[in-house]
Length: 264
Ligand code: GLP
Figure: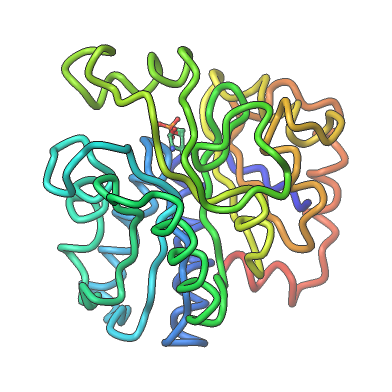
């Protein structure tokens, strides 16, 4: 895991957008794994700016989203379909047919999940998987106790996640109990992962993910086992890390070519 400390969420989001933009420029037909939630909103905003002002071209990009609520139609305002179109897709030149989000209305859920996995493989696998982290350590919607080798499937949300995500709905009662999510095994197959976490409310879980043991109780800790994961956090989210000085030291002493990959 590479731990990148940024002064605040705005700088962190710009750094992450830069990493994504660099991939799109180097490999126009790349495959992006995308996340929802409050955390990546500024990153998407920056990608939209780059599209408008710098001509960042999404025309050959394929995307796969991590998850979706079961029972919500794509046009439901709180669905992750709506989220992605609202905060990214409708503002860039991505081809709708190259956008993939699990279908919360799928009739045969196991079959739909298998097809989602097959499609990721058929597209050559995910180049960069963007991730946030839930307060209980979930990535995608892989709640604590998820198998570390799980694939796309149905999951039941915890009461805590229902509460956390209720701000996107009129009330907690309206948050669906069930979701479809890429599995931890699916995420681990990505060639690289970029996990964003900002704010003091993420400090404790970030410390568990980075410095705690790998455990299904903290699903994001599985990323310690991933070959190329970057954890991008702001000052506030880094508050409980015991090796913060070392992560800063590593960054300060990076060879210039490595820093250029992050800063450019
Ligand atoms: C949801 C999403 C996750 C996301 C998490 C954190 O549960 N399924 O992918 O990481 O929320 O959300 P936020 O960024 O709003 O803290």
